[in-house]
Length: 195
Image (cartoon, rainbow, N blue to C red):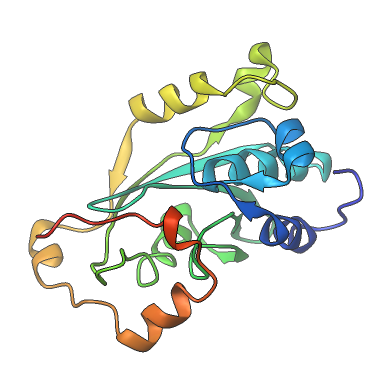
């Protein structure tokens, strides 16, 4: 992890990892050993890697409707940016050009849809500093990081759209969907319920 010189190198490392279909989060130590990561593992790994670059280790929880939730690592330089592991091409990194956290999260909106094309992003959490979990040794633990997951379930999330906005949403365009799922592990994709 100390070889990374900037956030883009962290993102490239995550892109090269095989996608892990199971849920929950595992420590950066386990990710490096197994070379497997889901989005939660990837966010925790990226937060630890960003910490080595001098940033606080922050993650943000994105909540979806009729789709998988997503977790991203965030950092701030001249603006907010993000690093993320994803089973799709549209939910990965964002350059640090966003003036607010909400603006950063909204940059994921159009590319956040399920396999039926339903745009699913609904809310997000405030950044969580993973240093609050130092007691469980989140950087090196061999066991799942359940306390972090439990914390994300219980903290406040901020809505992104209203009910009238949701009713007016168009489905993702077919070409965009093809690009989004181009390199996805199909077995790891959320299977939406019919709406």
